Amino acid sequence: MEPASDTPSRPTPPTAPTTTPTTPPMTQEHYVYVALGTASSCIRKDYPTLRVSLPHLPSYLKILEECGKAVDSITRPIIVPPVPSTCPKRRERLRALAKSARLADDVGQPSSRENEQFSLPIQTHGLLESAGVPKPLTQKERAQLKQNLLGDITNTPQPPPANPHFFIVANREELALPSVQCTISLSAVDHEDPMPQQYLPKVMALWDTGAQVNFITDDLFSPEFREFVKQHEVHEPYRFVGRAGGAGGTRVQLSCLVEFSNEIVVQLDTVATVLSRDAAPNGRSGVILGQQGMIDSVRYESIPRAMAVMEGIEIAEDQWGIFDLKCYRGVDGDLRRC
Image (cartoon, rainbow, N blue to C red; front, side):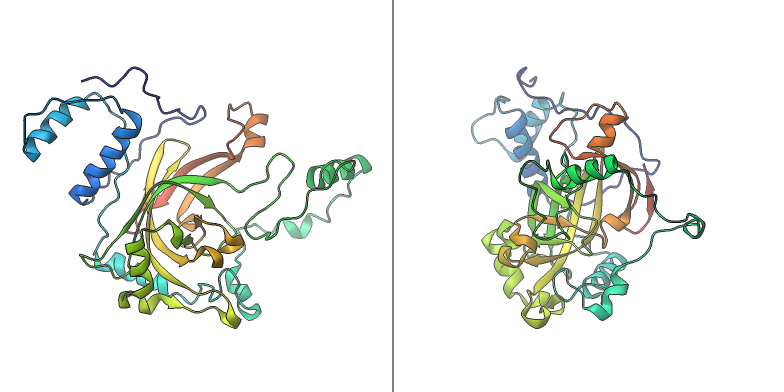
């Protein structure tokens, strides 16, 4: 059966040529109920008018056969959360991340004596020594800079962000950090069946290069998983208490499927710190993807919207810009090129 003609189609980024990874596709195990449930949710959203004819009290196989015929012409791929891996090598890497001394022991607030280890310089070639000093701005340039950062001086200036670590005012046009759409699977670092898991399909996560670690608020969880994170002893090695009364949290495994602008979906595996919404940075509910095991595991080209427009690239006004993935660290630590 063909999909309904009024079904909305997924927009294709105008700037992103389709690329094919040089490495073979990764095959993973999935729970049957998760695979079927994910497919069902996507069909319900995108093809709600599809129908099949079934006999009274059909078997599982008959249902799958008839539904398979109905969706045979739909070639769009979907993201299915995998079963948490029990690979010893991968588990050991995740445990090391969860226990790492480099994680801030107070949410995003390392102590002054530890600040150096939370900041590393980028690669340079020693050109700064002979570059002299910054060129002074002209009066016109200063006026333009002031207007860009503070707004029209005839109007009320834009107030500074409440927390510059998480909200950066770049100019009048761009007042937000980029976000990415992803599907997330959460489980205990030392997960064993039948421990519960949490799936978060198609969530918008803040892509924050200024955050050392990944955060997620527990108001996104089901009551069962929230209680599991708070009470189960399997999490005890990965709990921490903030210093001087600061917020504490629990570190869990985070498997994240991220979609990039150049039509590539990749899986990144790391750990995330679970917080209550009240304890989260700026009281923000949601997901913040930071450096450790996430941003520092990909190489990508970032094109902010203002630059894309200047280069003649068509882009919607409500989009931050373009992330084109070049390569990334695979689930087993291997380099995967795109």
